[in-house]
Image (tube, rainbow, N blue to C red; front, side, top):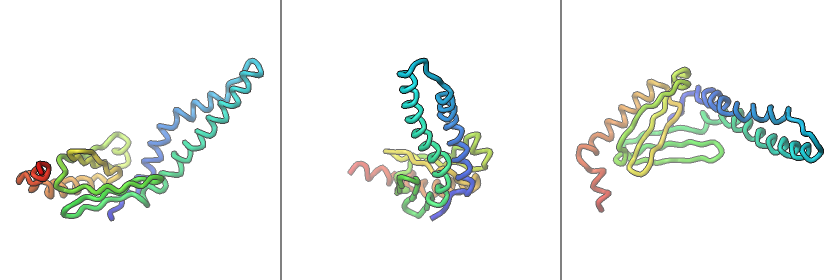
Length: 165
C-alpha cells in the first residue's frame, strides 16, 4: 500500500484549525458574556458547559486526529482496480474497478500549493472518490498511470457493455 505525503498531517492540522477558529472564537465570546439576573446566569452557565464539551471534541478533531492520517490512509493501484483506504475514526476502504473509472482530475487548492501536495479525484458512473495528500509529482504520475489503464477500456467500450447486462 502506498502512503500519502507525510506533510498531510500538518496540512490537515492547519486546515482544521482555520475551520475551527469560528467555533473557538464563538466560545471565547460566550465565556465573556454575563447575565443580568439569576435565571440568565444559569442559562449562560448551561450554554458554556455545552459549548465547552463541543469545543473539547473540536479540539480532538483538530489536534489529535490529524496525527494518524499519514499512518492509516493510503492507496494502491493494480491492473484491474484502485484501492483507497481513508479515515481515522471511521475507516473506509474503496475498491474501484479500473474499467468503471470515467474521469480523473488533479485538484490543488491554495493551502495544498503551499504544502506541495495535491488531490486526485476519481469519478465513476455511480460515485466520486478522492485521494487527498499526494505529493504533486506522484499525483501527476498516478493520474497518467490510471489514464493509461483506463484508455483501453474506454476505447473498446468494454466498461459500458457490462452495464447493459
